[in-house]
Image (cartoon, rainbow, N blue to C red; front, side):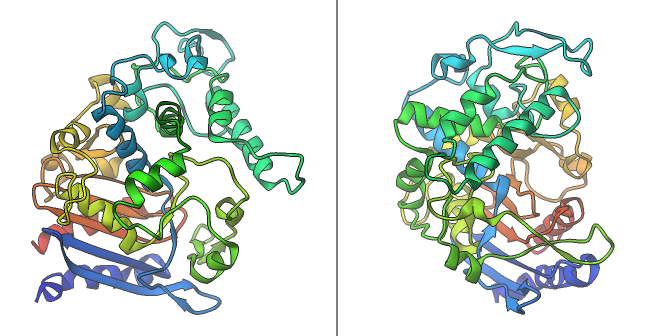
Length: 397
């Protein structure tokens, strides 16, 4: 009965191969703690004709961020830090920070930052960090750091050790920020820094903390930073692109996930997971932080704080992605605040995030609804898939 209710979702997902050349994808919907739809369609590997299954592994990229922020908020609930505290109290390398001049952003003029980075700036992407790129000076220098990280991971010589999470974040502190902390919103490495903060406060490696306080309690046995190469070959989806006008495989650097090859656990983008495993996390959040089996990740009021609108008027001007016009940004997630502006039929306070290759999560405590959608395409086609998928799902309720 429930699956018939969501047959429009199945039809939409099945149409993506023809309309957008997405070779394979999967979706699961859970409401009130009960699975109402699981649907897998298409191929995980076109060449080998390997189908997408419920246990297929996906690179979830930035959907890692929600888990990292949940870990940090667990420490917040324990009184281990305050959101308005300066970051340098815990990561002292961020005490004396530099920022590129906003007057001449294209040159290399650098000055001392007037504002400290507050811990809440890491959550809400207002610290001044960027990702790598070729635009702003901060992006260029961040790209150089990420290239050095990649090189350290690829080294086979025993005497050359891969960079650790803490080492990468210490190197990042030497790069001038793109703007004064707390003045703008910019998508970037803030949640990677948050991962290092978790390590510093908890005294545990980020991957160990996640395992003990997220994955083990929820019985998430198919989510992690490191995997054996054989299992990757058998279960990992290939990434595809249509940049050339036809579908082609993107040669991703899958060594990043191989067990023993990497000491850097990216709190912003490093996890692999499966449809059903990530749903265990999403469902718990949809139920207010405690799932139907009594497993508690966060308190209800803490979760409410996470999905509030945390952006200033100036920051909102930066958060201007057209397909997210209905959303603002909370503590590590998009959050629905302008449903009429975006033409959305979901609930006020519905929240979630997405991954670089198009995976998505919608979490709606008002409806006790969790949706996890998985695909692997670059560009992600999120501006097409996300708003339409959301409209179809909520149209079925």
